[in-house]
Image (cartoon, rainbow, N blue to C red; front, side):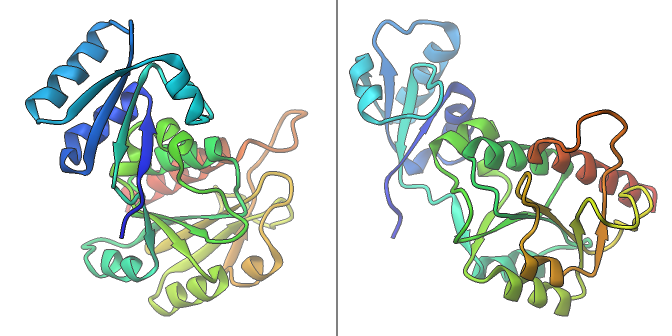
Length: 248
């Protein structure tokens, strides 16, 4: 059974209302918020027989939204987080080598959303996170993802190490990112069936996760900065994988 979720921000709400309007019960709009995009949202909602409520600023404050809501929010029964049983369905339905992103210990919802958005742009088939020691796909993450939450499966698994071993049994090569790796991402084969593992900024991957990796790769850094935000780093390595995979 799905819980009620709140999705806010114009882009995120537009994406949901276009792809899954039946999951939306109410569109909330801040009183006095009048621009063309908000008007378009209201018109679409009314045409789809979705209830539209005008509310004041206090309504949004009570929802304790972590981010800029842009004066729009929807109430939905959509369950954005899928369990690991759905991962097998996704993998079995592919007609190309699996391309996965694994986030180990990434807790900031802004980073979760940004990684999901990048993964969607790169054509990743699913983003995998552990249930513990991980951020959730909450309203803030969904807003930052700018529509990717409806398109790229977000899989929460009970035991990440066990999940990685199951992926290996399916022939998926596990590539972890670590500063002490001997090969750079540009020297590492990222073609074929691959799962790229990104650890938390600063701490990196956990020990058990690292032990499950088939290979490690580092990201060359030329300046004074020793590390990148995890969402930026994910974008660099994912699109290096895209480059390699498209040249096959």
